[in-house]
Structure formats: structure tokens, C-alpha cells
Figure (cartoon, rainbow, N blue to C red):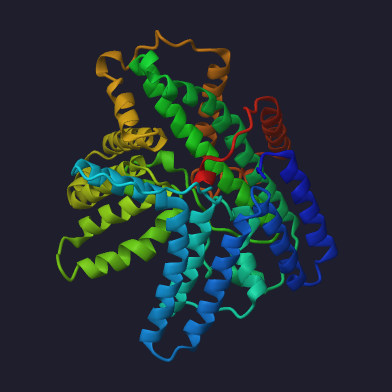
Length: 479
């Protein structure tokens, strides 16, 4: 069930009416209803996926209680390892089993040893990486003593399966979202209006920017050998906006839907294309994932390695980004994607003092140059992110040369493409003006008068309905 589909519109209207009108006097009944609705929403793709999310839910709910009742740290650690084994074991089987088996066989093949290993025909459950990280943060935080386990199973199950952010985030923490299921929620007009604003802007980014860019990206990346370097480079730029519009658009819609239901989700994007270094970029892009990997991978890893080496931070950064890259999918392209960012962030950390001195002397030039370098590295990494294989990525990269970087002779700039480029320019202009707010249309009433504000809404709705691209799955559903 896609956010940009008629089915979801009908589904959410039913949820809204029942939730706020029939069940408003009892948040427990609201939780039960949201849990059922979330399972319907998730099972819409494949009802068999419900078994996995139910298993993770029951496992970590039970482990959380047992962990709190443990009298020794050793006992707590055993329960934590059980949680890690179950959740990461399911993730490994359904997402990485074939990848590791195939590479294991290939590695032995290089040594002249032929193995006949079986791979499985496995359907990747939608959103498994997201809810696995979400439920793991719960048990890890209990182990660390940051939170107390809940004994309200319905609230916990709803926290894990909450349909707005279930399949593509934000990856929520129990410290933020779970307490909201344990108290009464009240409908407010301000929350509803603000939620609708974020939904409208999210739909604009998804159906107007991402889906329209996707048509050209698919053609250019598939047939890159037929195009000049300038066209291929344009394809990489269009993919950057496709990915941003698709993923941040999903997050906007998810946060907006949750806000209408009385919940506040974590901010997941903070205008990442306006940053001048990669470290800051990852503080603005997929914030819920980057903070998760920082808290649960980088910090403990760096603490452990610092006992061995004083320069452990560089190793820790690279390993963390390799894991972050592999989190996206079972392909070497994602490993290279993570490696590019790990090396870049490690280099930035290594040269931070020199860069700070240069920034003070040449602030504007330094910022502009930093932005250009950051965006170039981002585009380079996205070629690996989008490519089917490392060889495919190298083929795309090698087709772009300085001599043909501005050669567009092999490509026709159709009216559809020009319209897309105009909307991208509009996206950048509006988000630049909104970069100090939590989301793009926040507090629009303070920046515009009532008539311009309404015209803005009408214009966006008109554009969404009139210029939407062909309906496509959200890219991050596959992760």
C-alpha cells in the first residue's frame, strides 16, 4: 500500500474517523486499533511478512522484561545476545544469506576449488532493516539502563509496527515514540494542519520530483553507453534528486500522517543538499539511521578499539560506514558506497583543524568549494548506489570525461525534462528559504499572508495532480 495511492487515501480516512471519533475516549482502544491497522497496512504487500515482525516483537518484549528482572550484568548480557541473534539472524537470512553464499563460492572458485552451494529463493520482507534496528535499540537501551521495559504489550507492539514509519522510517527510538503510546492523545487543529502541510510537500517531492526524474534516470543508467558524458552526469544529478525526493518525501508523509494522529516522529532530513562537508551531510541525511549507527555501532566500536590504538576513530568511522552501506542492500555496490563515505568523513576528521583555519580566512569561497566537493563525492557514491554491479558503476563513471562533460548532443531535452528541471529549481528555492525550519512548509502562515498561503497550497495540489509521474514504489522499500 503506497502513500501515493488511492488505497492508502481510503485506508487513512477510515483510520482517521475511527481513531478520533469512535475511540477518542480510550488511548488503549486507539492503540489496539492502530496495531490492527498497522498489521493490515504491512500485510497488504504479503501477509507472510507478519510472522517475522510478530516474532521480533514478542522476542524483544519478553527479553526486555527478563533483562530488567536479571540480578547480574552477565545475565543481562545473555538476554541482549539472544535479542541480537534473533533479530540479526532473521535479517541475515532474509537479506544477506544468498549474498554471502555466492561470494563464499566465488572466493573458493578463485582458489580453484569448486563448491556447489545452494541459494534460497527468498522474498525480502518490506522494511525489515528499519523495524529490526528499531526493536534492537529498545533492548540495547534497556541493557544500558537508559530506559525501563514496558509491560504494556499492545503499546510495544504498536510502537514496533506503527504504520506511518514502519516500512521506510524514520527509525524511531523507544525513548521518543513508545511513551507516546502510553498516554492520552488529543486532536488539535494546529497539528492536523501542520501534518497536512508536510504531507503535501512530501507528495510533491515524491510524485512530481522523484517519479518524473526516475523515468530519465532509468533510461540513462541502463543505456549509458549510448550517451555522452554530459548526459550521464545529468543522469547522476537527476538520480540525486530522485532519491532525495523519494526518501525525504516518504519521511515527510510519514511524519505528517503521524502528526495528524497525535504523534511526533523524529526529523529524518534537514536540507542535506545545502551542506559544505560530508560529516554535516550525514547529520542531515537519513538522520535516524546516522544517529542509530553512531550510538549503537560507532561509539561502542571506537571505545573498544581505543584501548588498542589512539587513532581508532578513523578505523571506527570506516567500519561504521561500511556497515551503513551494507545495511542498504546485499551488493558490493553498497559496500563501495559506504567505503566512499567512510574514507571521506575520516579524512575530514583528520584535517578538521586545517579546514577550520581555512574557513576563517576564506569563509565564502571555502564554503562554496566545500559544497562543490561534497556534492561531487555524493554523486560519485550514488552511481555505485544506483548501479547493478561494481562493473556497471565503473562503466558509467568511465563514460564521463572532462572533454565530454558538457556534451549533450546525444540527448534531446524534451518538454517533460525541462518541466522536471523547473520543478527541481523550485524545490531548491523553497527549501533554501525554509532551511532554518524543521520542515519546508512549517510556519508558512508567518511567512506569507493568508491569500498567498492558500494559493501556495492550491498550486502544490494542482502540480501534484497535474504533473505526477508514473506511480512507482518508494526506493527505500527494498532496504
